[in-house]
Image (tube, rainbow, N blue to C red):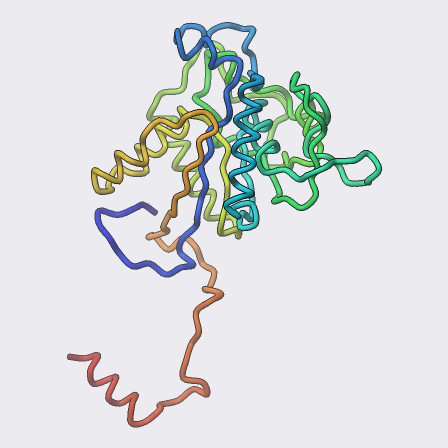
Length: 280
């Protein structure tokens, strides 16, 4: 599964369209973008979005609706951190939540100091949290997650069933994940996407995860393509890509292919001619 060294033809059912989104501005980004050491601040534990970040979410939400993208996405995958979950439900969630319905909201009111109303889970794609697309693990408090129990209270209609442990067992206070380990985790995540039946998937994740994963994934691409896909993502930036399964991991038959020649049997003399020509 890769992008190949040049142009090629691939069966449609061996491809998936993914829409990669970096989370909106978090409280850690404000100082961290000026001074990298600021990411060590314990006050930024599981950083939530800033007011500007929520404005970025609103703008991207308008874009995915105006472009019709919201109607094409089958699934939204989010990193299980506060800023990515807030971005995912804010961009892709439903409209007009009311307490009068029996349907759980995607996000309760004011989740993560957001000062936002509750977000509906109606008329929107399902959202699932997946650990594999988390940010660079270890040392930085902003990249340590809360318990799944806490998240489930704040985001009732988000699916957390893919996460094995309630507490964060991946983040270590004194060990930083290497770039190579992060890239390997990113490729494992892309392989996990092939286990999903959905064909068009939005992924809400982090800049470090995206950068190192796409660098590794694009290693055998044309240099211009590699340069384009591995550029750093801005907050709340969305880029759409098609990934190709060249190793034939996917096993489903295409839903749009048509076998032709029905009823079966040779349509003489055209088939004889076609068979002869195919041997030349």
